[in-house]
Image 1 (cartoon, one colour):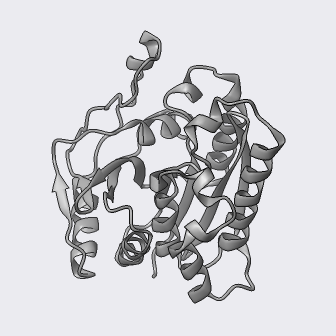
Image 2: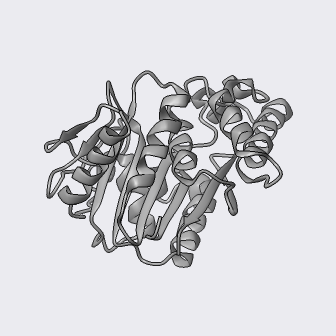
Amino acid sequence: MSTTIDVLFISHGGGPMPLLGDPGHRDMVERLSEIAGQLRKPSAILVISAHWEEAVPTITSGANPPLIYDYYGFPPEAYEIAYPCPGEPALARQVHQALQQAGISARLDERRGFDHGLFVPLKLMYPEADIPCIQLSLVNSLDAATHLAIGRALQALDVDDLLVIGSGFSFHNMQAFFAPDTPDIQARNQAFEEWLEATCCDVTIEETERAERLAHWERAPHARFCHPREEHLLPLHVCYGLAGRPSETHFSAMILGKQSGMFYWRIGG
């Protein structure tokens, strides 16, 4: 690959709470701002959001997608958040072509807007909203190997200074977020985070083994406690499938009292 692509898996927090001054997200807000300050400003951003599932990978292709406030029970200002970034139809078509060429059926959607998996972290990272963005769905089978394959297909992209963000959460047990933070919950959270960091970052692991570990992530310590449903983990699989090698940088943040991880790869350059 002659182009340079930054690949970043983030833990994006709870709904709009990072934008509403919630103290449980302070560490995350600081971490995302720090990461954005270390990256070159991207020419375009592709976000794989945990909050969009389709029968086949689907890409937003509108020129000016609206925002989707896909959360409920928050104060009125949560539904007045603005992030008027443009879409990027040409990039959407290139992503569609890359998937099709890899034998993966895919679809373009001119009408769908951007959900909070995109606009919440990007408002923290790039508040000017001047970078063209597109969004790529998960596949609703939630099959890990499928999402690794989607990432590998994206290796065909030829867009210099592209930023690919897997917008999920390395810990996503909603009941545990609001339960008393017992030593047992802390230990389970930490054990899975340690497994995930080793899996993504340990340079002594062969890539075939790394891919196998991610394909069978549910075998990890306390995997189904940390992810009763895996949609918030699968954006990481797409990121690794694209990178195909160990993450060079791991970031950690306490979000809603839980240890949460983020991973970065730079491809090319």
